[in-house]
Length: 141
Image (cartoon, rainbow, N blue to C red; front, side, top):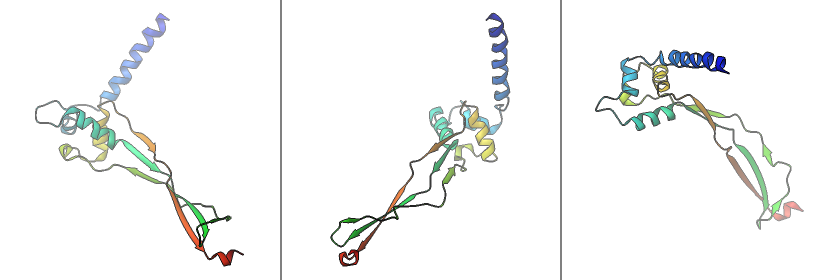
């Protein structure tokens, strides 16, 4: 047990040092994670990073076709669901104006990682499109 703690503690510390190696004092990192007066509040900059590192996937919409007669009664149909095209993935690329010292999105992403934040993915609920078709009740017979 003592061996494990003696071995694992330096290993964990070295991993943290390697990650923090990218967090040196360049102007991009200072703008994003700095503490000097005049910067936006730390919580605000951290929230901006959290949003920037979030990728949102919206599944393709499902189309539901409902057929009703002219008095509003549903009519059974075989065309209930249609396969939609594909999912939409949205990843942030705009860098906040206070981080204009960051050359590109990749450098801003690295600066955000200095907060200890990592990229994450969320999946939005699948949208449903309902198409209602009305037919004359005489056509149904």
